[in-house]
Length: 239
Image (tube, rainbow, N blue to C red; front, side, top):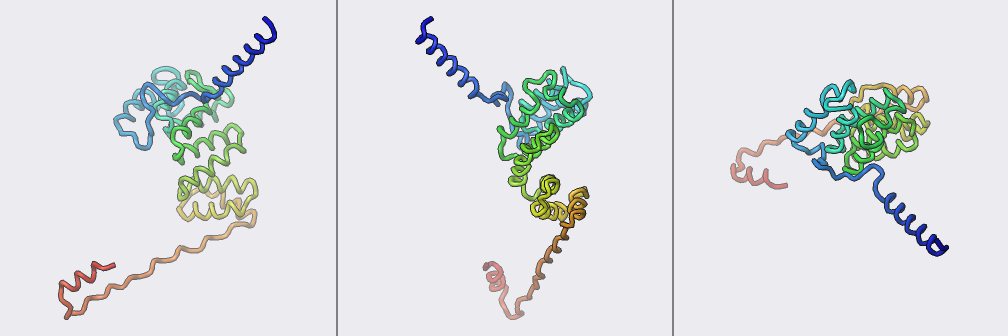
C-alpha cells in the first residue's frame, strides 16, 4: 500500500470514528414502546409498565420481577426516561453497591446514562435535574452536580426541597450569602430538616425571614338603599 493510499484509508477511518462519536453515548431515546413523559402519561400506560417491571420488590431493590433488577429498571426507564421513582431506585442501588452498581446487570447502559437520558428527554423536568444531581453527589462528582441543582431551582423556584438542597450545597462551600435566601424560602414553606439552618446559625449567618405581610382587609360597603337594584348590579360589574 503506497503512502497516498494509506493516507486516504486513515482519513476514512477518522471520518467513521467521528460519525460514531457523534451519536449519543447513552443511546437514542426512540423505543419500541414509548418513550413517554411520565408526568403526563395516562394511568393505564403507567400500570402496564409498572405492574410488569417496576414492582414493589424492584423499587425496593430486593429482586427483579422478569429478570435482573437492572433489566426491569432499564425497561421502565426506556419507556419513561423521567420516571422519578425508578431514577431514585438507581440512586439507592448505587449507594448500596458502590462502584459495582455503576452498570447494573441487565441494564443497557451505565447507570449515569439513565439520568442523562431523563434530562435529554424532558429538559423542563425539574425533578429529573434534581435526581441527576443526587446521583452525581452519590458518586462524588460534586462539581458536576451543582449546575444540575441550580437548573432544578430555576425550573421550579418554589419547591422547598430543591431550595433546601441547593442552599445546603452553598453552605458547605461557605457561600452563605447564596445559602441564606434559599434556606429562608425552604423553611418558610415548612421544610422539616434542620441541617441547613443549623449550619447557618453556627456560621453566624442565619437571619429569620421577615413575617409575611397580612393581606389588607377589604371592607364591603352596602349600596345606598335608594340605589336601584339594576344600578347596583351594573356598578359591581365595572373594574
